[in-house]
Image (tube, rainbow, N blue to C red; front, side, top):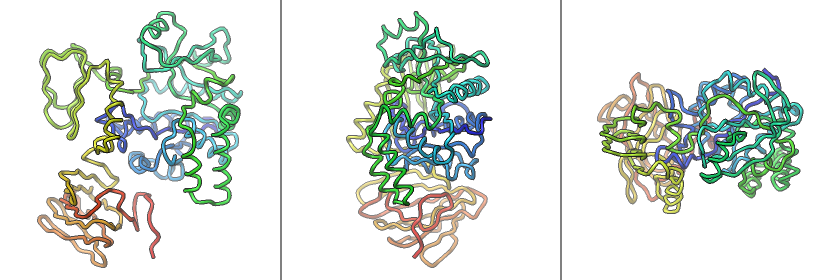
Length: 483
């Protein structure tokens, strides 16, 4: 392994085109789409073939940091100080600039492998070979990206045309070439022409470069981002509060690294790779990585179908029955159902934009929300009240916390609960209940060997999840200093 190679996993996206399974607070990288592990867990294992866990960095937003830490808890010690928090999503150029800044502070010779958290890649050995060649080219000052050989006239990806007459380096059957041009997402006719002509590759969004080189190119082509990074570094050097640096970051233009640098740089390099890749960017792309039936269908969950063809049917909990569908997508979750032609699956993001404008909760999170200690499901809510089913894993406990706006009433329906309420600590069994007044420190724990289930009834003028003050926490979430 290269002692100066680091991996930066970009995990701040929301995956809006994978709604309703993906939500703003539970995005695509946290989903189990292929196999038993989530996409970000698969990505973590993939990069561990290239770098040790202590040299893996996670670039994400405050809202997503907690569930990502939970999913990557196997490496919690190595990753403890390796989360790079973007105050809010500003696309890949500001996120990469922030990560490059941090790596240069730690290792001026750092080489960055930058990759999204939510892609599916088959062929880890070939992936490692591409990273090795990428690192070799990055050591000469090149900005490297991986090109995927197109299998169809895809209009949802950008394309790269390399200068095949100039070979920069070769290794393990792979070759790096200067980029002749980047091409925006084409129409169907142009994409078909690229496929027939050959010599064009999909832009994978995976990069290898020296951290200092990408910062240098940002200075050359995106002076506003470069100035902001220098300001943030200066604030960190003098021990300024995180809120000051956040204000600087939020003023940055939301721009991709491709538009910001790669399309402008003379250093841009592409390695056409030979591993299987999919960004699983929308529901139609699921058929690239999932098993298909003889009629070309992809079924997941409790599905009963009669005579459908080339369709994708996903059932979360309820039975979904379909008859005679052709080239359709049906996705059913407990609180939302999507039905659309496969050809329109890119437009799912338009639905999410409408829901966001309406303030609909269905764009934010699922009714069941997973936490490090277990989960909760919203059963019903209305003005001034909310009813939840809360599950706590054996040995798990919530933070010691307080709410300003709401009181809570807990009823145990399975298992044993240990409750802290103010100065009291006591045990509740099945059918026992207790009340938690407003502005009272409290904690729920499961001391038993079986999963604890309670029904929680909240009352108050405001019932948002942000009405919480933590005093102690087992999972690295922010706490208030004890007075």
